Length: 160
Ligand code: THU
Image 1 (tube, rainbow, N blue to C red):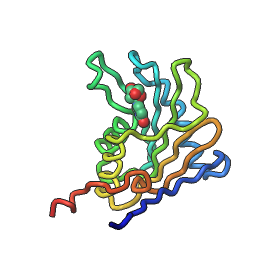
Image 2: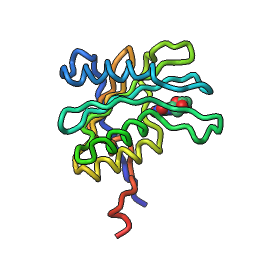
Image 3: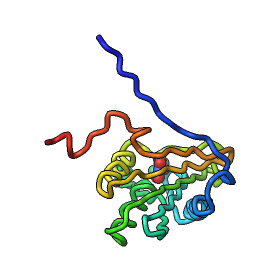
Image 4: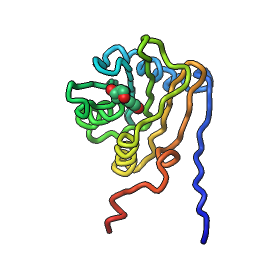
């Protein structure tokens, strides 16, 4: 039997170590938490995406009394950006979240499995990586491609 070891590359940064554009994206993701509709969890997630032409689109989680209809901030934002600018892919995605006390989290959260799959599709569709900035008040996780946190991913090529 052979062991296959999968590695993840994640950097922990202070916002000031990031580019101006990336710092703007963080501010926009934090700001976007205010648009969250989190009636059931009270967990407010904001997202901001930078597109290949420099445009920024923001979004947030939107919940529903039928809980499974809830949509995460990441997917709402990516889908909105793709619908608005179908020719421009997401190059960077930033997320920030506030807890039930409306306080920004000190440790970053990372995209759920469903969002990771959607981010992977974004990379495949636009043929470039999506850089992730996962914001926490104590530091930002920087991940250069979703593949770093989605090992053994399923893509269209697997069906050929
Ligand atoms: N949520 C997101 O929007 N993004 C994540 O990465 C994790 C979870 C939302 C979904 C739901 O509205 C709330 O957070 C609690 O799960």
